[in-house]
Length: 359
View (cartoon, rainbow, N blue to C red):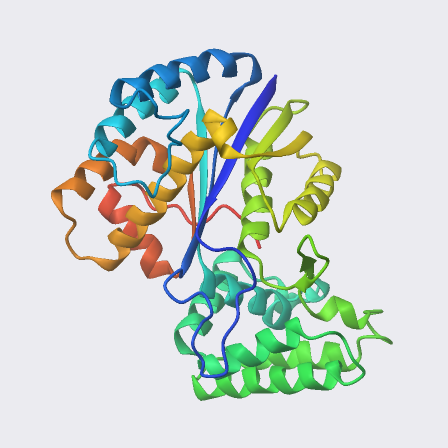
């Protein structure tokens, strides 16, 4: 079977950085979401017509002259979402949403390259369960001072130089001391330090293997921490594993002025890993109704998620919205501190399931 996948995002893209005064450059945009709806390619035309009829019931110009947007303050938002959700579910439309805390994603990269690097997985000490690795992310998220996180980010952002290895070793020693100060076993960091010091002779590692892969924007500028790129790979990787072997994905992404080239690059990588991507293209959402629908869901879910984790009690409007969206949340990948995940699943009345992505 062939599937059309419609993708849109909510929240600022671009590098995640710490400024010199240790404020995060994303300011109020602490989270990023990428969402998708996908369905049998042959049913898309009929679905689009049905969606158009629902939108016209609320506003004759909606979806055409007036683009359907999550940021718009519709008085009929909940009623419209209820009608759309019932229609999509009745037509076997599937959902997938990737919601990430940007700081948490940065710490995940730190753990992947500084605590449990892939080149040491063969050692007994590194045969740790996935939960232990996620525990390391939560530990560092809660305890590591921002000044040290900035050091890691700066190392990753800078071009590789002759002294990069020594600077990286200095950072690993900072982590080792931090583990000791928090009464955690530092042996795991010491193994990484030893591996870096013997990277050429014992592990045949190039310097570039020690740090996260650098991506790039459409101008060719290298950028190290792009939440939209990670989310894109997570989302399509998961969808690819949910469909049957041999099924093809035709992907329609909201227009990307900055990152279409790097997303195209990663789509080729995913295809080589048998994800099933047959085609990727970028469209202005004004010209594609089902991308507008994806935007409507993605932005609404991100806003509601932030309300859920921030407030002890939700207002009646958000409680109603949460009830409407509950069937959609079952395929919502939350990449955030464990307390945020638990809060979200508990308030939504869902069985807690950790992120399905193995980082």
